[in-house]
Image (cartoon, rainbow, N blue to C red; front, side, top):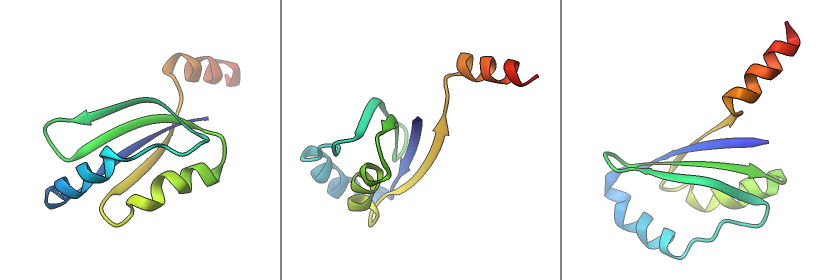
Length: 88
C-alpha cells in the first residue's frame, strides 16, 4: 500500500535536521518512491510503500523529537476511479 508523509519542523531545527539527514538511510521495508522538499518552508513530502509496521516505526521514531509527521494512505487517481466505478 502507498503512503505519503508530510513532515514539518521548526526552522530553529534546520541545522540539526540537515546533520541527521546527511547520514540517514531509510530502513529495510520502507521503500521510497519519491521525495520532495518544499523550498518555501520547513516541509518534506515522501511517497513510499511499506512492507510492515516495523519499517514505519523504524523510519519515523528517530525523528519524533524534531519533526511532526502526518501519514496519509494514498492511491493513484486513475486506480481510485477504477475502484469506485466497480462499487457503483
